[in-house]
Image 1 (tube, helix red, strand yellow):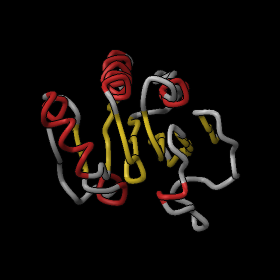
Image 2 (spheres, helix red, strand yellow):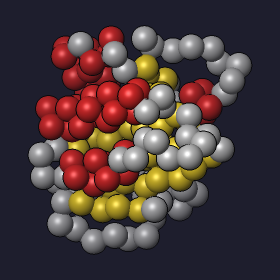
Image 3 (cartoon, one colour):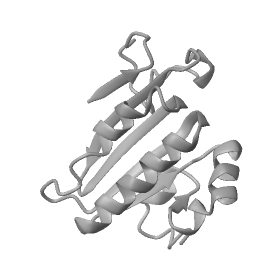
Image 4 (cartoon, rainbow, N blue to C red):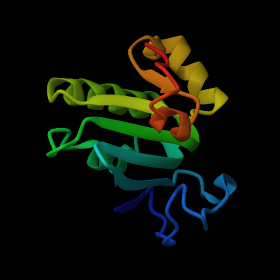
Length: 146
């Protein structure tokens, strides 16, 4: 599944794939969301800018935490350049919905600006944050964040 929001077209590149565009290829206001499943984990890769105008793409990708066999939703933020309060609230609401469905929602690879947003707002106390997707999926990496 691949979503593009913010008024620009879909180029067909999946975030995190071998032909991934560099993060600078995103146009202002554009959000790209790619969803894949690895066993009991839904991985939602987010790139570009997450704000009031683009949050619907992420809401759609995070919906349905009660999906059969789903244990975790991992939101890959490595290519997310900007996140405003709407984007943050989208993540926090999705975490609550997932928790009610018995599913963990975690984030991986946030850039320094997003880490700062999480710290300033206290979101880092409720979101489990991993350094990257690989460490989040590694059963031997141990717990991260809250």
